[in-house]
Image (tube, rainbow, N blue to C red; front, top):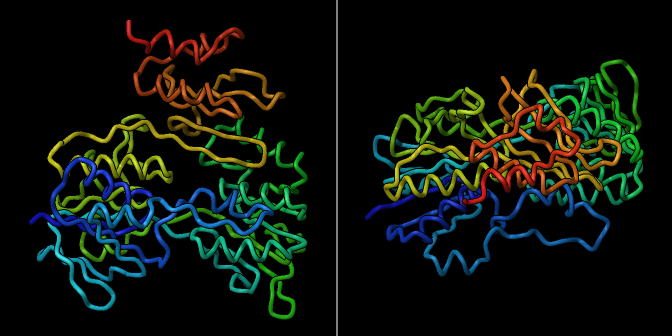
Length: 411
């Protein structure tokens, strides 16, 4: 009997199991997760979960009955310690072996750490899991001064949530603009100004040098400039790194993630990798990429389920991302990179606009703030390859929504 084992109970891993059963896979399906909780949604952890409301419950990806009714063997609080590819088994921490005919690595990522003095002090937090979010929420309830290290999505989402609760917040970022690896310079500059208007003390070009202790807990952060920032709570949000140690130990190729082909398959064709841990070829980027998004995990899960069921095709989904930072809803379709040409559609000062990113005259990404119609249109246009020119976007009367209707509607 065919047996699919999925290592990782996040968005991608659960989606593989769901899609297999939805499309009639008759074999055994096992999902293995390290956390004891029922698989849950991660995006709310840095937003709604931190709001000043009665303590929220985690949002499950699927109800408990889903796994029972669909004959999915959900193994929580379990860790895979080794892969034996020759015998096609995974080994659990208690020594139990689970055989597989297809193995999906959806191991996700872990937070990056900083090797600076004081990083292990009480009051210093990271944010990746439900447990992390619970500790951070409790600490935020009594915090007076917060320092956030890193102005990426997680750091800025948390900063906005903390400011909404009236806490003093300082964000230090070693780069010269926030979200520098993810958005265009124009968008980064807009969000820098927006967070400062929310009352956040945003310090760009300032890394973390050390954390200062007082009576066993963190009392301040010292920047690389030597300036000291008072803090009784520090969130370190300097990015994540792929969980690729199982694949590496099993002899699979690893290069900023588990290397897979255009089908999301490793060199061992019984083994797939999806989500934050997988590095796959992307035609738009013209290179192998590793994407950190719920959409990439879930779409990758659907794709791998199809592969296991015998439908072989390349993974070509248009990437998309989102981030809610206070009143600002940032939505991105496509992938941009430093050096792309940009054209702005809409009024930046109104807080409702889009940045269209072009490479060699071809639209490659659209970043939208509080303009969901632009974002949805961009996803349609990029998927269809029916994109406007820079000159069209520059016209004050131009509408991405109208352009998408004209070019993608059936005739």
